[in-house]
Length: 235
Image 1 (spheres, one colour):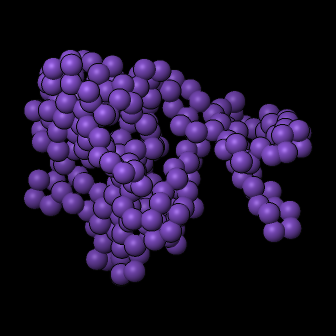
Image 2: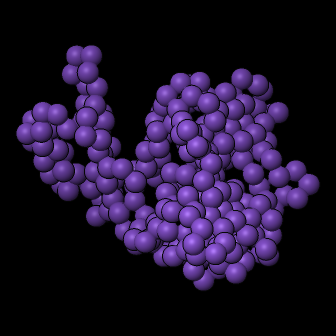
């Protein structure tokens, strides 16, 4: 996960001074020690968004269903390789795939049954990504890692496979900060609904025709963007 982008730290000393003031204000007004501060500062026509990142240990528990799951992991361990993160569950995993939009070779995969000399191109898990995980059987998964807020996910025109990186569910319309006018369709996949696993949200139609109404923890989503946008997630 990225913190404050470098391009927002120029000139360094000027913004450092602003950051110190904001952090001081945060500690004076926060009602709990891990509270996240998000501030918008606008001067003339130039706007910047500064964040104070809050991180703490968290255990992520979910159940992956036999077959395909569209998965997200918001508790990222220090060793984020698939073989390490899922070391206790490798016997139940057929494969893991993800899609990096804009790449010359967007699909990458990890298969725990391939021999050690095979070079696998999915080497590290990210909380901003969605993952297709194919399971041999229903598996209860528990991962210990670090949970950080806020989360920013840079999306580009076309299809993006994004992770919903919060530990609480949110209504779709309440969780689209930064991209609410820049997409045409969001697709989710509910592996527990064997009759109709695909769910969709289209902002251009009557909401009664949508069957994707909220984002769920541990789920990934396909988002079809019309322009560059940054999806901000915070509790």
